[in-house]
Length: 141
Image (cartoon, rainbow, N blue to C red; front, side, top):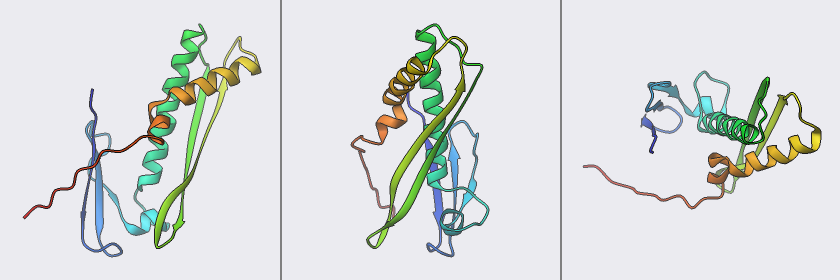
């Protein structure tokens, strides 16, 4: 199974603009700019998209692990806070903080923590954070 997201950009870094799209069209040419990433202007940015993907992936991984244990959450809220900071002459993602709050009938704290840690370890987006990323660059004429 493959899924994709895409981005387009035109213009310089500060004056230019871009758009992001998803294969499902959940986002279709959604705008982003330098100032929506590093300032307070409307639009999205790669870090919040990564955070949303991570939170969603973890939630599904956690619900899967709970199901294996014959448990089902009444409520589950996950959040992935992605921090970007200065790194030499550029920027880097300096940390990611994943959190979950859940109401699950019939579970104690120890079992909750154990299943949550297994879900974090099994989440494909969590694994991505440590993965070798293949890369291709093509110059178009």
